[in-house]
Image (cartoon, rainbow, N blue to C red; front, side):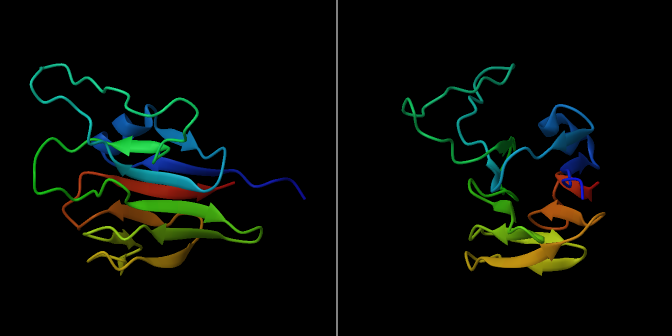
Length: 138
């Protein structure tokens, strides 16, 4: 049986912008998503300054930028993992939680997990979030 390919598809302009394309194939698990907190708001063209130590892994594989408070996206919001048989979305104790197919996972720093299936819609944060993705498996 061929290996499955998992991807995130951006459903909003902000989500597509964060992915850099309409779709992003997830190459390694766990795949971590969170808010970019190093953006310099004093300049018109947003610049990101790298503060990682050499050799250290970043906190996230995909960084989402929110220009204004209140934030929907936590710095370490959720991750997608694969346990060999299924994909799982794990809320990383975010403040607002993650909405998967209309059900809230985590929030209030509680964490939580839900199985992901092909076509599931993921809203990062509350229902007013600018970041809406579809999870695809092919």
